[in-house]
Image (tube, rainbow, N blue to C red; front, side):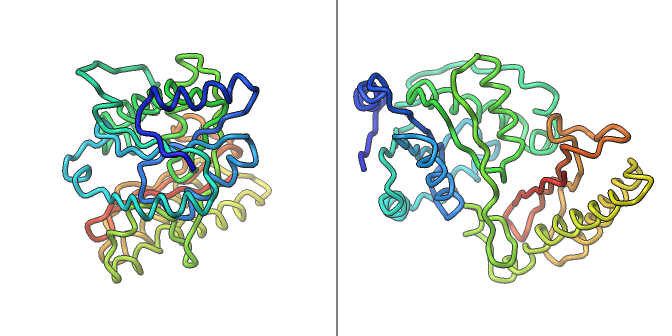
Length: 289
């Protein structure tokens, strides 16, 4: 496993491999790795000849400086996991390497930038797309892999790829969950034991919504907007009734636009949730159809 810290060294390593016809995959991360990240590495190994995993805690996507400060950075643990997973290259640049000087970044990501996470974390997706573009420029991957847990983030990255017409294919990999259903996340480490138990209500609400959705969909009259709103209201009630959980949103949306689905739309729907559990904010989602 090669450890690289500069864009120049990364280019020197990857250029001859690319010229030799090797297919390169990138798995961008901010570290604090878990089994969800390893699932991305595994899928990348199925799709490509060379797998690059980046570890970089990107300052421009944090809307709260306190979040940036307390973000976990267990580097030794991360490198051990990547070594065991047989990752080929780990790219770990310093902030100065990725942001050598002042720069302006703002691109049109469409209306979906400003809803859900975009509403609660204004400017977040500008920072995300800014660093992902830099990583794509540095690695020049054929494919890049992201987790479904960050559903909205993947949509924003796809918008950025289309905007710049980048020759990279985006692959979204399924959410990896704990035994009780909680979506694996680097933030879970901040949950106190009691909060950890309460956090399971997020996935439970999603699973219950999916079951109710499938039942409603089987009705002769099909789904209506009112039925979807009823499912949303029940999930919100379930989550809000759980001690220590402060709900930000639970919605059923069109998976392409993140907007309320038009009447009669029964495919491509996704349920998305965000809540503060104790002092930790968590997100999750589930594809309904």
